[in-house]
Length: 129
Image (cartoon, rainbow, N blue to C red; front, side, top):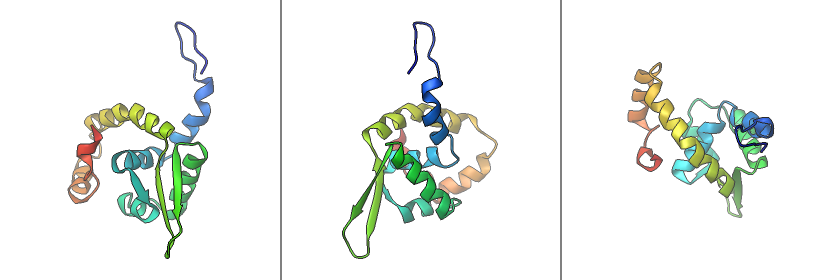
């Protein structure tokens, strides 16, 4: 990262910002940060409005960036789990305050969020803080 005593420059952060600014990336990191390991089908269930292609592409990008790791198990049927790498965990720790701030200050979708939270979206809320 480019720094001097008074400034931090974003020139070196452009690559990672382009990845985590994608629509589903922070939600995937959030889910992995709160749940630990998830299978593809569990993401589809928890992020019910994501389509499989977008999920697959975003997971591939996060794996490529070294934020998420994919582990395959030699079982029948095949099983694949995703989890945060050490670098992904440091990113998770960095974005937790942002997510918490957004949850406390974004009231545009409050009613819709409360309805979803009662169903399943916020089940892991106690792990967040």
